[in-house]
Image (cartoon, rainbow, N blue to C red):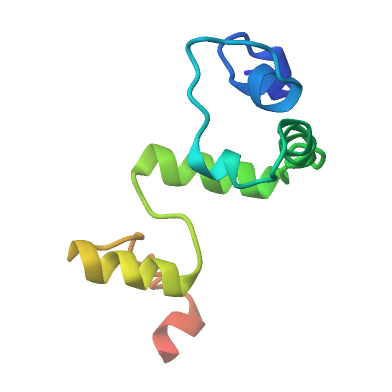
Length: 105
């Protein structure tokens, strides 16, 4: 989409990171917990965007989103499966039946 959230016209970044007035935005409770003052919150919010996500993480996010799978640790996935009573990730592939490793297992 864009290289940085500040480049996206419909992002709340301008409000959260720079304090620009926007009557359409209500601050989220987690945003308000970043710091006690508006300036400190803005600084903390900008810090969240200082590093880029790895290509692998972006691929994982896209795949999980597109296939409606859960993204997270094994423990987190287990908790979601337990709560929803459904699989949170795909079953492992069957393997190459012609391979020696498969036949030995």
